[in-house]
Length: 199
Image (cartoon, rainbow, N blue to C red; front, side, top):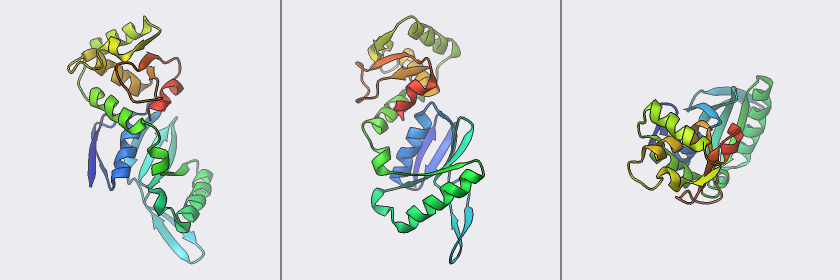
């Protein structure tokens, strides 16, 4: 059993594998994810030889739309998993929800997981609303600046905590084409889609 404390949910998320744990980190840090839950429901469905049931790994809400997500290692995606995925995609779409399969190939691209850990390490710290607003105002006053301008490498920097929380909320965007560091650019997000690359 793997556990992580979600900043977004304000509770411990329990995952059944290391890969699900990594997915939970990415869901937690993504500004487009409104909420998520692990092992949310048991879905019963019929196939030619009778009834089956399936518990997806996550339910995720993005733009007020519900998506059920199954997490698998690429090596474990067999004909049964592919068939179930196709079937549930069609059936849930008819009910106004989505279903998708994500593999380690999707989740472990680039530096997304390490970047999520770096943002969450900062965002988990408490910050006053006044300090958060002051950080937002400082960000508004500049164009694109390195994270160093907000004390990203300073252990107790409240501005770095503020920037991390602004990234998670979609108010700040970062360049995700590499590992986050003091040199990574940050800017005011004009649109929450700008910050999607974090996760």
